[in-house]
Amino acid sequence: MNRREFGKKVITGTAGIAAAPLLLSPGWKGANDRVNVAVIGIRGQGRDHISSYSGLKNARVAALCDVDSNLFGGIVKNYFTDKGLEKPKIYTDMRKLFDDKDIDAVSVVTPNHWHALASIWALQAGKHVSVEKPCCHNFHEGQKLVEAAEKYGKIVQDGAEQRSNPCAQTMADYLHKGNLGEVYMAKGLCYKWRDTIGKTPDEPVPAGVDYNLWLGPAPERPFSKNRFHYNWHWNWDFGNGDMGNQGVHEMDIARWGLGVTLPSKISSIGGHFMFDDDQQTPNDLITVFEFPNPNGGGDKKKILQFEVRHWITNREGIVSDNQQPGNNYMFSSENIVGNLFYGSKGYLTKNVNEWQSFLGKERVAGEKGSGLGDHYKNFIDAIVANNQDLAMGNIREGFYSCALMHLGNIAYRLGRTLEFDPVKMKFINDPQADALLTRQYRSPFVVPEKV
Image 1 (cartoon, rainbow, N blue to C red):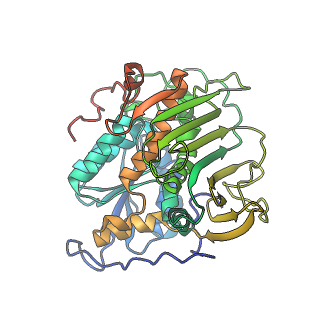
Image 2 (image 1 turned 135 degrees about the vertical axis):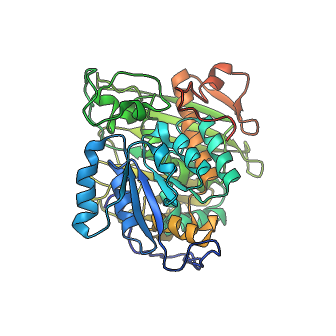
Image 3 (image 1 turned 60 degrees about the vertical axis):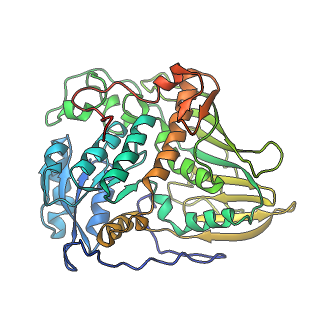
């Protein structure tokens, strides 16, 4: 099971989440009309977006957009013509796609450095937006995206897909009702087997690739395979390391369970170990965030700890005691991904589709929950009903979780503990750290100050 395969919703030990009724908005086109979706970025996760939207009765993939025209032929054949579906429109430049009045919504599945700008442009063009995680490549972009979402009044969904899972919903409800007592600490774990990416030389841009559009807001760089498909994740100009790749999902769950937004103190330490290669981001990283907790005992604070490990590691108790390793991306022979919560009454362990509480000194198994949802369906249903609440993954909440990742990476890159003002959204007396909250943009691909 990969992270885009959704199963039947199952809840055990806790009350289920009632499905909201789907009512057609007075402004929607008609009961028999489908939402025309364009997918921007069709390699990797983009293909999951294509297949998922294509499987919904009230949506169709009406357009594809990618800077690598080599991808279109195979995608159109495998996902459309071979399945008897109408061929989508094809675009290389997303700006031309945004001018297409037939497109109702877009899924932004580009590399990270394009997420916020593509989403803002889409909103300005009157499109509904679902944006992959992380919703922004830096802190400033996230602020601007939230402003744009609130200004233009379109449905906007953050890619924190676990927000759509009954497993995560019931877990948060269980914690927020105080069933684990005072929850003072949460952990997010991202232990994924990552081999060396090696070194690749600068070389001519491959035929069929619009590299200028691919770079977009990022600085001018020569083409190299390790700065292109997928391995862009490990380059600061384009990606945010594994904390901003897989890890931002677990950061979101940890923050949600703790009931916090932005931290007041951040410490981060780690490095790029074992390999002499082109990777810039750390492959081992431990980041700790401190949040004020006026209603708590003792020191009146909460702690969120996040850790990336890239190689051979222990299982850290991330699953319930009776669960065996399975063949899925969260818990396998190679990967351990999930969350741990610690409270005054016990602790709780969670993976993508199951959580289990353990209570008291004897760690007796308590309540548990499970179930997967459909993030894509929620987005489309929200558009049809004109109801933002149906689009699980509120963009402001998505920004807060991405903000943690950005603040952690800044602390790592500067090599020191940072003090942060969560109201002013600035570091305290630290202009060097403040400078890393944004970036210099390459014209004309500039995230606007006024959205």
